Amino acid sequence: MAALRALFWPLIAGVVILGGWEIWVNVADVEQFLLPAPSAIARALQENFSTVAEAARATFKSALYGFLLGGSAGFLVALVSSRFRRLGDGLTPLAIVLASTPIVVLAPIANIWFGITSAAAKIVVVAVVTFFPVFVNAARGLDSVSSSDIELMRSYGASRMTILLRVRIPTSLPMLFVGLKIAASLAMITTIVSEYFGGSRRTLGVYITQAASVVRFDDAWAGIVAACVLALTLYGGVQLLERLVAPWYTRRAQ
Image 1 (cartoon, rainbow, N blue to C red):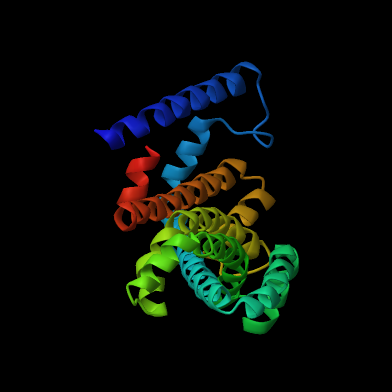
Image 2 (cartoon, rainbow, N blue to C red):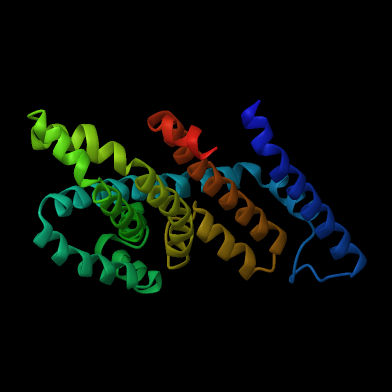
């Protein structure tokens, strides 16, 4: 019931927005190259479903693998920087530099290193982009443990590993999942943009680019819809994992 209640208002908002979009496009006679109607996008998605699904599958794999790689690296580096403060002070500026590097710069370089049609190039770019939000939020969560909790555990003779596993990591979970949710959203955006600079013909980024180049804008929007669905799926997976790993926090947040 709680899940249904959470979905009720987003579904209502979606129906209102799509209905208003359809009416406005038809009443105002908006040109298709400016904005196709939702009904035209739905028809294009239905007619090209197998092609879009195949492209979506390849794009989602690159986004997922890059997200897992970047998220894991971000959390591990946050653990190291929390344990070794001076090392953490040196790693933070490097992470900021990586986060400040535009995708339009990273993608061509990765294509040169790994091959323009290689999925590895997209995975690496996604990993670089998703690393920073996970690292920053995880490091902040690990450092948010109160000194009284640490002193209490030490008074019981707990080792550093025990304190890490029983206190620091559980305390950091809310902030860690904030970073993972941000990274999940960035993963799909980064993958699509990376594919604009070249890649397998069976990817969403290339599909959208090719459809737009031959003035099939309804097909291009069908690819955009598929990308949005994938982004929501990845974000929802992170949210579900949060409920499973930190139920005490999600119940309190509600």
